[in-house]
Length: 324
Ligand code: HEM
Image (cartoon, rainbow, N blue to C red):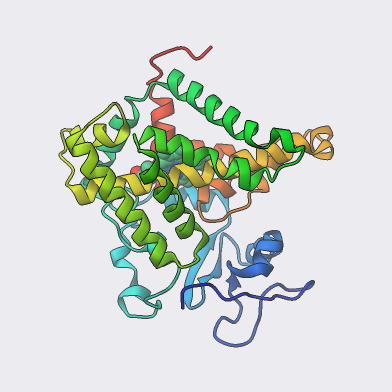
């Protein structure tokens, strides 16, 4: 089984089935959830700071729904370890081997899934490589990519702003940051999108890995001024496997939140009702995804979370040029 079955919840009333194996657990997959996630979150909030969910069929988890509890979980790795090799249900064989969540949640040697000294070492490579980016050039590049995408649909008089803009822009920017030739970049985008969508995630993971192996091989022989080469040259001396998995993490962590941020900012901009209501925070509270806890949280939460590499980079004063 490679694709997620649809979950048809009732149109009104309690969104969660109280019969069968998943009784009482909110299914965070399928059409019913995608159509109206707020109903599921409201149901979960009845449980207090965390409620029972199913991430995919047979994959149980607790979803934190309160700000203070989220901070406590994110900032106490001693109590809430990130290393998913310690995931009991997986170790006991209770998670289906072909579950679509595994490419996203199974252990990888990257800073998201490690703790203590191992985390520090990998994180140092990520933080210091990001710090070498010139934010002025990055901003110019984002503008160029945005202009290119807008140019592709502007003549049509209409556009799917999610599919043709919000979803594509961060991927194209990351391809540039990683120093990808276009054929490798296309495979990266396709593989990473497949993992996020959870459709044939195993195949998507293989495509992503193949593209990154090619990128790493290329950069070993022809390094450039890009994140892949900087990670490679970092004194902590990442192995090829570690390098590949920091790249997966950077793209995974860096793309999905931006897609939601852009999509919600566009929604806010285009919605007269929200603009006139002054609902600045609505943009954040209406995020489309639950996969990155940061995207389902308003700004202050993510700013106070200490482990996001991007925030540390932006806050570290690494701006080498003034973008104004
Ligand atoms: C709206 C934008 C973003 C939001 C809301 C966000 C939010 C988050 C959150 C909540 C975490 C988990 C923190 C924890 O485990 O304690 C995280 C981790 C991470 N994020 Fe971000 N992020 C964003 C953008 C980015 C970007 C653009 C990048 C890469 C360029 C990035 C790279 C990372 C990395 C590498 C981690 C793992 C850090 C670690 O475990 O040490 N993020 N992010």
